[in-house]
Image (tube, rainbow, N blue to C red):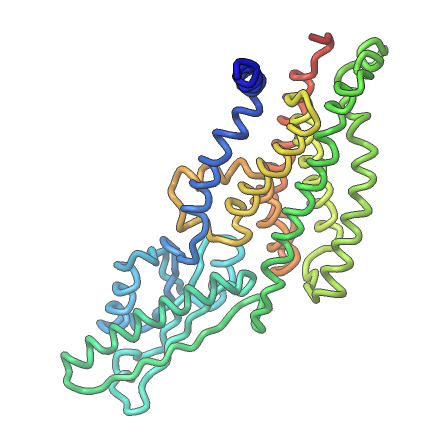
Length: 368
């Protein structure tokens, strides 16, 4: 029995001595609970909406106030012309636009009722469908309240219009997100084991005694995987366009440029993990489990970030996939130019440069 207790004690010491194992065992479950608890939600809250209201009467103001006082919408700007509607979705963060007709308050008394147009961003059909459903329910509730006051049945018929994706194909939303997840996971997995493999096989000494500087060693590890990633990128784009039917409305060259920058960031992230981890299995676990959960739940690929706590929304800003997905949707689906995605490009370039710099600093020129 003493021998058994000694073996158990030895295993405890092995586990407690490996701090990365302790992080994976104790921190990862906490991260999963937080992400699953807050991330898995189909609710969309705090969405900004704009209003095009030529009449500005009591009824239209009542409808606007009904939406603005709910937990789902936040009133933004009043538009002055229809030409501003598309700009709300291409250059601002609006999720919905309400369009009223002339003399809306007078027409509501007609037996046939009156129509109100709900315009949403169809590049994310799931969110657009949820927002238009919320707005339709709130408008119907306001019509019932107004009917009780006037003792007459009033009919307000919302007309839904989706920009950029009128057919509501879900692949328009999911494919850019899937591209972001696949690229970062594959690239990070490939490079995360590059240096740890050298450490485990005992060949790190060869690298350290070579005249190569640390940053050249880092880039020499990255370049082969970068070339392989180009093949993966070509395959993903071909399958997305010809098999899944996702259009490339914008510049194909801009799509490739954004993808290449994102590949560089993903490879650099994997290299940074390889400078931190001492074993291949630890590097693989960090790359797979540690990256997959934040990328899937905090990139805006599946669940809207607006409904999450503010802390998670801030944390999502350091997820490279978030900026890649935003840029790809703007170029591929909306057909926007480089000026509209310049912020995302600058952020990705900055992330890549910072991660490479951190990897060089973390690279040990002496063995422990």
